[in-house]
Length: 465
Ligand code: SAM
Ligand code: SF4
Image (spheres, rainbow, N blue to C red):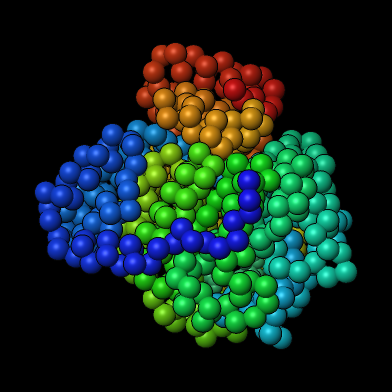
């Protein structure tokens, strides 16, 4: 396989034509697309363009209704939890929207020692987390890339009396194929990288220095990760830099390219919107700020377009927006997050943070909130540990794996959380949500779930199938 060096799969003309073609709102065409989406086969770029142009309130209500249907069919009430661990805020790049950019002299720079990485991990495990997203700026001064590998090994080595981190996802700057191979050896879950903008001109305007200024090096990074054997990958634009419809269609082209080249698209999509970041004027006034209404619409469209791909919502968003988007598509959320390195073991330092968070609640509060509205928080990490990744995951997901496997796994890991970490109010809300979920299950799946829950209540931990 030859290395992809140019992202020639982004076709701005095709996107422009599709958006133009979609301008004339045609209810019959929209309804035909929604019918197709309900069959869980996904949508193409033109379908996505058509849905993104819908503005009539009644038609929009139908889009949300279809998204709720798809979300419920595939994911049920399950919501996967994770926490970001910021490892370093030192960076050689100049992204005009980010507080970590090199020229921001007011930021308190920190790269955690391995000892500090272990302490942060302990703090997260003691909250009840099992899944981390390791994040860093681009540069490991005096240490180099292998320091990242050491950090991953350090996190996996942390064992507390009640638990440990069982899956580490990674969001770091693009690597070479050889480095990605080494990263894979450390047993990571997903490699995640946001293209920020798929629009070349916009990309050049906001990435004004450092290696990240090279659009193609970034846009072909997921190819390199997959060439290196990392088959669970996460992508996403940074919404607010350019027109959200263009970015979403270009992301569809990215997914189509991966499917064509590797037989599988991405495992997750993230939907970050630009939040105010220290010392960044543009982050206070993003050039193409996405309104709350459009944001909810784009999440729903993604759910319809790539039904088996997880959609991740971070604490950039407010509790209200997180609640609203859960029903129309989001399947993974973070809770109790800090965006400054060392933030879990010392007082929050806004002068070292990447951006302002919209949700400041603790993990326990977020879990209680979503359990009260009937969701089942999941701390499951089974799939990648069982080798269900990439194409294997998608092949099994389609005939209903997510319900059969993830349903019981979500319940056993949620019971584990409730027994070991929850406050009394969260435990009460959680037990109610579990009872309701068991009642909804088909008899065979319920039998698995009952057996697994019994084992956890008897004291066994890390029960999964
Ligand atoms: N430095 C690496 C990179 O840029 O790919 C990885 C980590 S970076 C800290 C993670 C992501 O944070 C970026 O890809 C960007 O999308 C997002 N980000 C940066 N500034 C942001 C802001 N002001 N608001 C919201 N998200 C932001
Ligand atoms: Fe550095 Fe990433 Fe922030 Fe850009 S987005 S300045 S690469 S940390």
